Amino acid sequence: MLAGPAMADPASDYADYCAACHGESRLGGLGPALIPETLGRMRGPDLDAVIAEGRPATQMAGFAEELGPEGVAALAEYLRRPLAKVPDWGAEEIAASRETNPDYVAADAPQWDADPMNVTLAVETGDHHVSVLDGDTFEVMDRFATPFAVHGGPKFTPDGRFVFIMSRDGWVQKYDLWALQEVGRVRAGLNSRNIAISADGEWLAVANYLPMTLTILATDDLSVAKIMPVVAKDGTESRVSAVYQAPQRDSFILALKDAAEIWEVSTDPEAAPVYEGFVHSYETGMVEALASSEGLFARRRIEIDEPLDDFFFSDDYRNLIGAARDGSRAVVVNLVVGRAIAELPLEGMPHLGSGISWELDGRRVMATPHLKEGKLSVIDTESWELVKTIETDGPGFFLRSHENTPYFWADVFFGPNRDAMHVIDKRTLEIVKTLRPVPGATVAHVEFTRDGRHALVSVWEEDGAVIVYDAATLEEVTRLPMNKPSGKYNVWNKITFSEGTSH
Ligand code: DHE
Image (cartoon, rainbow, N blue to C red; front, side, top):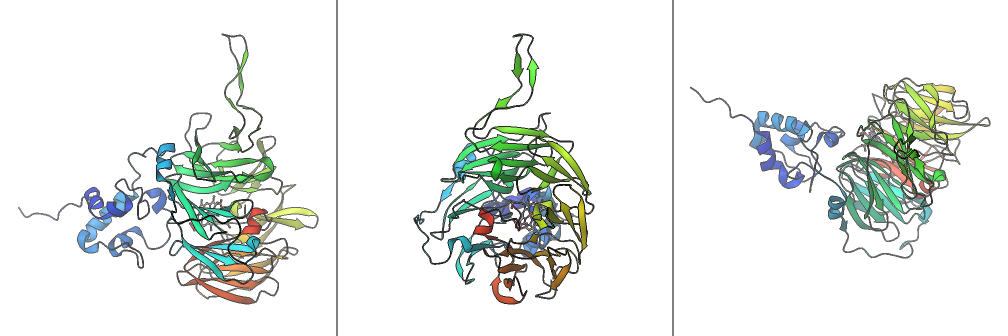
């Protein structure tokens, strides 16, 4: 009998060709974690092509010759399967992952002349770097390597001195803006969503999918302050979709992916006790609390009817709007009374996390893009009525504005018009101009300088750029070449929680 083609053995191929860089258990090393939670989120060439041909300008080589087409397909399939067992990733493992920069020298004042409050970071996802920009001259003050696949906004300490950056593989990097040096990094989770810093700048919360925990780090030395397993009242374990800082409430707010609860974790050491209900004990004849916590990291559960995520917060942080899973509604939850108070019909998957707010005719409104429809919804944040639907050239991802500009900027991230950027008048709610700086290239995400005079727009391509516009005349001022720039973050706008930026 003739021998057929050798059966592909992806586990052994993984051990032979991938494990040295991506870790024996697929959790990353020199290269990123190769687990579905990470791979499913990566844009760019598909997995089979990367295995076969490698990634240009990286250490990822191609293995088409060694594996053959069937071997490549089998290995890709193997990597798309979830891990059979999620390894422990508790305080010990996190502490062991901590790395400090041996060359770091702390500076007690900025070692440069720029306005420290007008520094802007630009995340370059093409080669995993961050550029530090002087917001007045637009000079690049430093460009440093980040962990692989940074996601979400970096978070600044309230004095603007340090910034924390998170990658999808759960690494948290601490960078000193005064010294222009990395301080160190730690792996707070195996697959993480985003980070939030406490109002006093002491604590950094990391929202994790893997394991299903919230990790709280001390910001001074990245040590583990607390790990909270996320388990709903009915015993369901849940991933954390995102964690947000609620400054006026001195707390973190958690959106849970798999449970109909919102969590609030206090960052006030004097926080009053939070009780989770009471029972009458027949043994003691007393009324006893089911569970309670108080002080720093006291946890409150807000029970809702369905899981909500992607939160927008009203400026006073009394209310949040969360997106329902079916993509057609948003629910307003009042954090003071701890329950849903309104429902908004918002077809087309609103992207509430990108929402911004401003004053319109004496009332405070917010605007949100939609990920599945070419429109923006403007909502009154007191009556929760829809004020207007603005038609756009396609579904968008981000919105941005500033207190000192009459316009807000909306990208068209998806579809044939992804090279368009709408500029919309906050008073008339009409599009006043549609910019197309590089025909055919994706343009997305805007950040303003501290004074709101300039708007920085990403040309989201490997040979891309950050384009600086005069925010009043809408004329181009300068173009800074960058490698697939994504988000930009101005120190002042972020630490003051500008109404024109998502928080
Ligand atoms: Fe993001 C912010 C969730 C896909 C780029 N994104 C956020 C935040 C959340 C979130 C919860 C707020 C975090 C913060 O700043 O603290 N993102 C999600 C998703 O659930 C979604 C749709 C699917 C997923 O991949 O998990 C998603 N995000 C993307 C992308 O595909 C983007 C465009 C490219 C990328 O880098 O992965 C992307 N997300 C961003 C950016 C921000 C962000 C640039 C920060 C925006 C800001 O201005 O603050």
